[in-house]
Image 1 (spheres, rainbow, N blue to C red):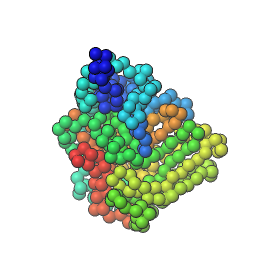
Image 2: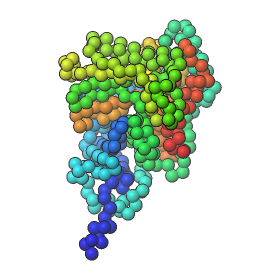
Image 3: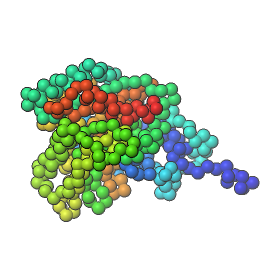
Image 4: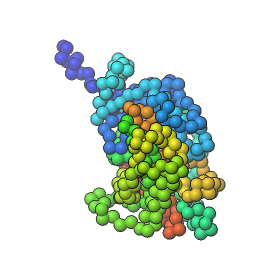
Length: 396
């Protein structure tokens, strides 16, 4: 009899525990973030039982352990989810540390249905219009005119797309699918009463500080479709792509110059895979101990956002133009997000390849870097490719 009871008890895994936890805490009014770092087998669910905390500035070094979620407009408040409860899973199994905060009796009903879907995700009322193709190509033409008039060197107009979610759509299942499809992306699911529910699989690191106080950021630009089996060393990039990536690199180096930081290591540019796309990527690293700059993470986070990869150069001109001409509020698209002081590390990413989720409708977003060599039709196609990162997983 004992053997029979033992055999009937299933192990606690992410597939049967996560739906229970999300339902339990979201219904209670908590804010949650679920994420998986690039090239990792670990997933983490953070629960902020008192909801979000509003921050005027993000100070990584003094922060409690939690998760940051910030909008594109840096003048708006930043949202912080304190890590009141954190559940970690490694290769689908609940970590030993997390088992101490799980009550097995609470999930007895879930054990009989490992695929049970959460019934409650937070939604925010929005009426975001879809950007029509003609409107976007016209916007690109305006950008090119601004470049010709020396108003800006590069600018990144974006567009939105609203679409009906397929029957049975589940944000949690989509999160798992994104993790499997894009192992080298930062995959996230955030749901709060202030923001609604957002999903994403971004390739772009903004700032990381590891436990050895090594700082890292990247310059990422240029976009091509990735074909399986492609030799990355043989990929040929256009002059437009090379120059666009060089501008993002110069933007980072100029930020270093502003704080008189000269001791950094630069790797690249090189071709890097980001899901269904490839980009040109350059890595920058700084030893914060050797440079005696313990606040570097916070300082660079403030200087970099919004990066030239999501806004343009010069920042003031491009930001004003986009605010007046894009025709919608980016909200958290092209803002930044990620765990802060979690396991003595902070990993903050640009919120790209993301979508906002309602009960029956989703919105996704994408932009393209416009330089003097840009062609409106090609830039429209680039945004289509980027949106397909999510759409191909939602509607395979």
